[in-house]
Image (tube, rainbow over the protein chains, first blue to last red):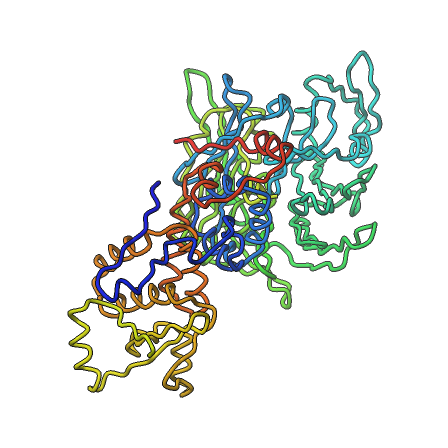
Length: 444
Length: 171
């Protein structure tokens, strides 16, 4: 790229010096970092994301600059919208690929650890994936720094599911669940454990190298009993802790610094404090799910269900209900295939004073992202990769995914015209399933 | 004898001299760092929010002192403001900006800092966009060359970043 000096026309040219001559103005070559922060942020906000990644490695100061950019208001206007994790390619297990939703811009990173495609993901938050390795040990994996953080052992976890054991017999895990003896083969055990017991995991924050402060919450569903517990641990803990009783039905949790919101089906929103060594339930808002949800479910055909997500927007809480229908596809003479497909969404806002959920028709200039990630909302004003007033979803119906191994239910629902678009990329099964990832965590 | 500078075409200068006595208002801006004076139309000068406020508050006396901005930067800035006040055709302005901002990084930084200080939004937007465009799509190495930044990452850090950040964009 040529950097040219411009010569000015006219005027008293002999007196006018060009601004371009560096010796007239500056001495240091790294002048960029002497510019006031808000201007640097302005420049960064005009750069595409991949350039920001490259900028990060220019010199040590650039990382400092990027950190303050992330926490500035210029950044929040840039809307680094979530990426979707793409399935691995057989011939290239060293790379991890992501793409944006609408324009399908693909980003690839190399140097993936060998176990990445073998281990299971329970959920994503920011740039973290909560994983279970082959030995059913949970850990956090940072997609960007490739850092791994060990989480407390699976034993204390399984105790929460009222599982006694595990005992290892002939290399197989045996544990007792609700009085029944359940046999888990060590090698394939992870998948079974996952889709029978675990629904979702969230992490409270991006653990930066400054402070390893975070906590992890896992929603554990107990099979067909319809109940779901919360398992909790702090960074550095030895054990998982159970929150709430055995008859809870947690369906979603959303973290907000030292506090998290939990949606407890069918009528509670709990606000928990995580300041002390034991999280405490600060508030219990009793607001029953609107009857409309149940009426809607009844009006659909068979094989349908709904999933609930809790989305936080500033200080408001929204209930996002995803109606999933089972659609029978005829794929041969005597073969019927059951495909699970999201049909539509309903969104309700919590009125804390009236203790009621009020339906909302529009999300304004926000887009919601739900699925196996920590539910999030994002203003997508000016971002071409995502449309406002829409709900982007990935598949978290684990039992259906693993039963069928046919496809993923991924797409977007537009609130304005109540239309749904399905993402073709995921019409056939592959591993890992898609997750929403926050690329901002890339900047440590 | 003070050096007065008229920015623009010499042919226009005489016309401007004739018009000086008419109802167009003129301001003199003086860069206090190097004592250079610029005579500018008020309509051009008030593209700077700082100067605009001074004029509106009635504090603009015969000579407005401008600290922190050097004479040559001031000259460039006035040229920019003049063009943007005179011209309304978007296309022409775009072409002008492209040529005008064809400068080295150091010059651009100075322009940016001055435009920020004087609160000239249009210029600030143009320069920041220009710098962003210069490093868009470039690798770390290329960015370092373009912006003339020394790479003082330690060998360890270089290795770490090579390992962590093997990112590419694919279609």
